[in-house]
Length: 145
Image (tube, rainbow, N blue to C red):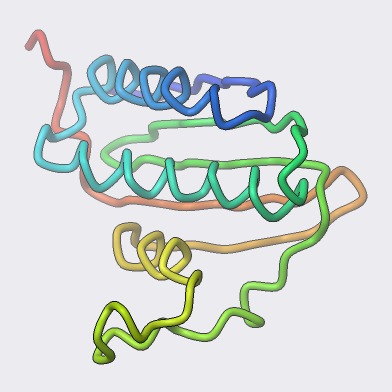
């Protein structure tokens, strides 16, 4: 597969998450993403979108754009919103060695994104907040090849 790029503009409600995941899955199929990578990619995208909905807009709806691009064997995921800026350094790493019932709520989504993707970066501009995630070497050719 060469290059591919698609965008999904979300209405910014949790009800939109199933459509977002269907959108992502259709791109995985079209691009020939390794089927073993689908779950991790879906989970990273779902966590990223849920974080935008929960934190950027403080629980209110707010539109955001999800872009998924494939270049060569790599996948690039970008979320852009116009909500409150987010400082990823303000989130303490989750205490994974503490029993589940004793852990504080939150922080796992960012941890999962960082574990599942090869690169995760945040930037904040006048146009909004941008989350970029890259997963390398997951595209293995067209699914109908």
